[in-house]
Length: 637
Image (tube, rainbow, N blue to C red; front, side, top):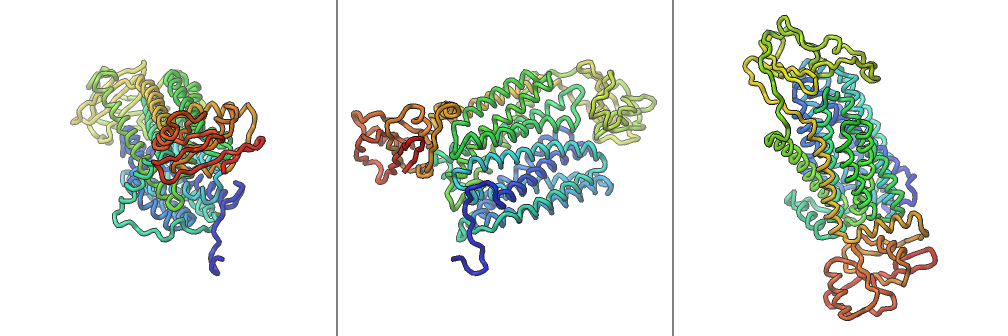
């Protein structure tokens, strides 16, 4: 009996419609929305105030957001296991209220407060703070799932959780761009919206029922990062965990890489995409994940369905390749990004479910936090690789230099007009560059496409130039569109590159990298293709109810005793095991040696039930799991 006044422990429910699960969904949905809305609106705010250039802002955002995942991974894991995960979730939702309050102050300071540069850096600091929020919130969020849901509901629960997470990513990304567009120079309104949503999310988190700590006697590590190395060793020596961690880290890598590619694609367009269009296209990938995740949960049924991973990876590869050839046709390109996202949901849900299911019960939060450290490595590697590829393309001449006419005009900058942070009209002495009326376009005309047949010129104005300064004007054309670069009298002209063809190769490269990771995963679990075939056959063939798969250990030496069944049912039974299963159809010569070799490799031998098991000397203890087939019901005992 619990002590008087204490809360009884939460037991996993047999339904998803519980107060705790609904509260968790609402809290994490609003957290993910605010993450991305702050991410996007901060980036555009920095560009619009000319505190950062487009390339600087695009490169800085993932660093600010993901750095806390690496810095605080062990502390986040310790807190998630040492204290109630419910308390951690509520505490960080309250912290989110404070963070959005700081963002509101930064937006006000950068607009009404009259300090655009200082205000921008205050807002940018909240990207780091929201990254810190995620670093602590995510281990508790994923770690709590096995505590509130039984194993047979984990896949469906994760499917819905991921679907809503990525729906929030879509809405947050797009809303960040839309609000930056609508509330230009009135960005304080963005802060008010974010603060209101954070308060609602904090209230929703309190619906989660109280629960005990997973490991209340856990001591704080004497060396802060010692648990990280221990957890990395656990994850890399456990076949199911290493499989999950590698797959999830690549997901983080490819999302960061593709996001930067889409931003670059928008910036390389002639004319350039504005923040509204760019955010909408970036959000279509998350839309696909939002569609694919619940479908993946449904297809998984009551188990961890690893057969979805090759199907998802194959779809991601096809989507990347088709996107590379659809860049000049926007509807086709958007369809490809949605396909990539949908297949990513197939790829991601079983990996997260496997990580939660196989992580030790007393350190699930710690394992998820350490996995986040690996994810950060993937995200940083993506940023470094992206920047390196762009630099290499420029250095090798793959991106052609554009011929620039320097100094076509000089004079004093008398007037400038901006549209959404970008100059659209300048008056230099008696010379006018750009269109006055373009700066005053009506928002509805912009959104619904009432466009002039004449494309306005692109104008680049140095951040070091102010009204009244002497300037030099450089000029070039690209795709018959005029480009004017205006710099200070003491500044040097910088080279201009035609980057329009690079995104095609970046998308093709993303498909190639996905294929490489699929090969690595197939090396870790050799029968992944067989699992996919079994999954597809099961959708249209005879239906079986398979239960008690939790009796099969994730790492311990294990042998399956199998009755004689048809190949289709046999493959379905094998797909319940999250390690490679090797079938022995009969006991031949050196049977004991062969069994021992498979166990050493970490595989699960499947032996006919009527074959007597020999003595195995290499392992003092081997788990024997018997498979019982009773009509349409299959059990593991």
